[in-house]
Amino acid sequence: MSTHPLGAVTLVDTTLRDGMSSVSHQFTPENVAAIAAGLDRAGVKTIEVAHGIGLGASSIQYGFAAATDPDYVRAAVDAVENADIAALYVPGIATLPELGKAIDAGIKTVRVAVHCTEADCGQQPIEWAKEQGLTVMTFLMMSHKLEPDALAEQAVKLDSYGADVVYVVDSAGAMVPAQAAARVAALRSAIDADLGFHAHNNLGVGIANALAAADNGATFIDGSLRGLGASAGNAQTEVLAAAFDRAGWQTDVDLFELIDTAEHIVAPLMKEPQIVDETALVLGYAGVYSTFFHPTKRAAKKFGVPTRDILLELGKRGVIGGQEDMIIDVASELAGRTYETPAVAAV
Image (cartoon, rainbow, N blue to C red; front, side):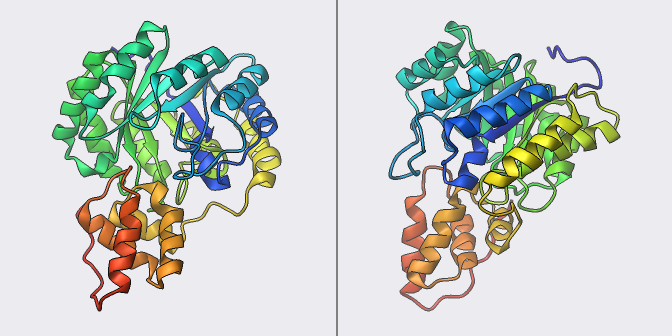
């Protein structure tokens, strides 16, 4: 059962993981230390750190990071006094030895992310991590692709493996508040573990989705400073803090420390503002994984095909994370034939 007091939520910050996607994974360990220290001063209890795709993802396929995952973790661990440092583990990308290196570097929490239909892929890393004494948060990625009851069935598996927290994850930013609420409510009826919600902002309702999730039982809410994150970015941590305070929730964070860290440390490091541009919006509307954002733009330029048509076709085909090769296939096909704009997939 949840250990949260009534009316309280825990804000988890992912600037230094999901936000890495906004800076091509080029934060330095010094950048990580400065941001982590600011988040710690603000009272954020869990800070996620590593390559934007997670442990072990620094590669030609996903982009090389400026430093290794253990280097990033150590920089954050050394910079904080109270916060736990977490890392993301995606089965098929990360390995248990890589998770072991992150543990040696100082993580206390691991976030195991699986596609929403494949909870069983998380069993080995969840059980192994629990044996190592880690807090285990789990992600049901692309949660919009399953109806609430079917998503809850997958959550039951994660709960049975020992997950401390199970997240509804809007990886594509495809949900609106009623959809987020329904999925969290279904999980709350099905499992005893704490619930979390991870919002992307492609439809401009990331904050509203997070509030709806909390109203229906989510007590861990993800955000990132200045909204840094894949495609349109995440719900913005400092805005979450203000909105939850206005809505009467207890967050135990210092809003103005968050604002200062966002304004004076994160903002100067950003390549460009985090906005909902055409590609980000269509990506969310089509229900396509957020990390397809930059590869789709590159493919559109290479093949002379509109990004929106590539994304709509990818949505129609129901692609998921790990199928990035389909971007080139679709762009090539569209460039080689006369086509009508594909219909959007149901979300």
